[in-house]
Image 1: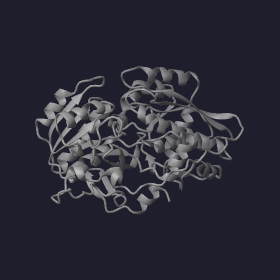
Image 2 (image 1 turned 90 degrees about the vertical axis):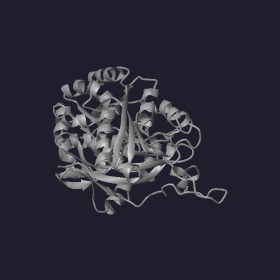
Image 3 (image 1 turned 30 degrees about the vertical axis):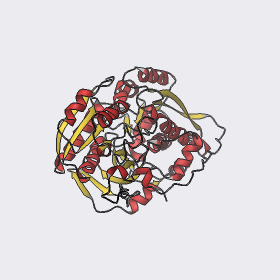
Image 4 (image 1 turned 135 degrees about the vertical axis):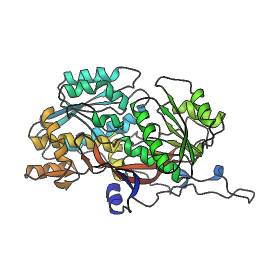
Length: 452
């Protein structure tokens, strides 16, 4: 059974977050949350001795990579592109996202039906970050090659730099990781979709997590862009709604290299916890916040933009027991094995499932509409995500469509179900925890609905 299926089968009663957003504890805790180790002198337990994240987890079995099946020999019927990060502040997210895209393409091309009797092709291009115009150049290149859809970008700020270019050309853009609430009402002609939920959900889950962990006074340091501002707003609302107080909230800009002013302003208010909404800037902020200012690293909370492996960046123990959130289900070993079959060097699987589902949805929309053009794919994206017979793979869904059956694709990342804005109306938010080596492991997962 997939992780998604396990979670669906064991939802508890809804926990109200804010109006219109409900979250559910989907499974029992996957790890013990900070199991303390007795102090050597027989005294009280200490946070420094706590076993958290990977240290508290049962050792996982090695995952054997699953090689993709061979593609059928036939002409290409669907051409898509990707604009995903191989350079810039989110480059760590590129490999799993690209692997998810490639895995979906491999499975489509190995299936008996393919897309309208043919294969699918992907052309990968870099997105860079908002300090460059790499993404707009990539979009221009892909559009000149006649793609019908584009997967990307990972960064909300980057997607805003080329969304008009792509959707204006009547090419579908679907992001596996954009979470800015601003996309929900953006004038994209109906050509923009995403398989990750709006930060209306992640922000609420994170804010509730912080308060439920015992923090009363909360500080926030955040990136001043569409992504960071949206998360900051929703984390703040959730903290206040849960009975906490945001005592300081300080912004920085993309390209900044000094963060002392923001750190000093937040620490001066003596917060119980600090939410750090950042990208690669985290590698500069944490040493000053924890090492220089002495803030307790276990009281720092991360988000999807900076939930990463810092074992090579920080001293051991810096982030022990810190937590973070990441939209999406917790990838199970079977899906990880498939991704490793595409890229055996993967160490992070973030947004791999969302990227995989993005390709499958575009391919199924083309099959449902009988044409692989951008307008036909756009017109059928919502239909293949809701209301029909549930199916969970391209091959299964394509067979149902061939038989004249309406489908409802439920992906590896969750049920998806697009609304009229191209947003998924329900999704999962994973909660993760760091251990003593500054690596993280899954703790539990929350299910939330944004419908209505």
